[in-house]
Image (tube, rainbow, N blue to C red; front, side):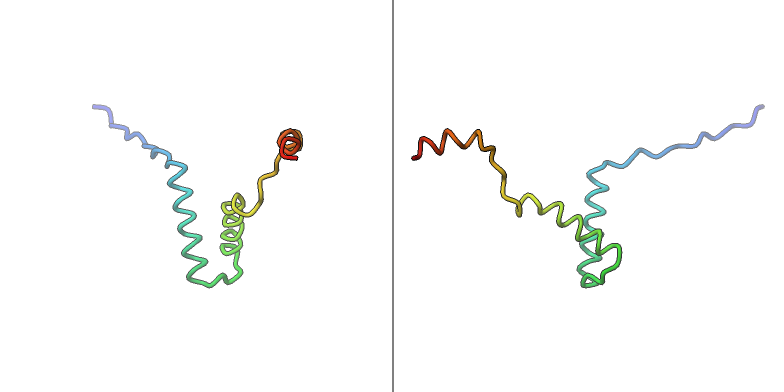
Length: 75
């Protein structure tokens, strides 16, 4: 009788959204618990926070060619 060979199983890859949520939760907890001590994790938190909130802080830029006809009608 031949010996049985156990095949190594590779785990299923985690969903990207789950990984992102987990990392974000970790950074939020770290920054809140350490009052932003200035370590590399706090720096990551600040970069991620800035990227996620950028949409709320920068005004949308309008294309001049799109606005010119509307401005001409308003005048």
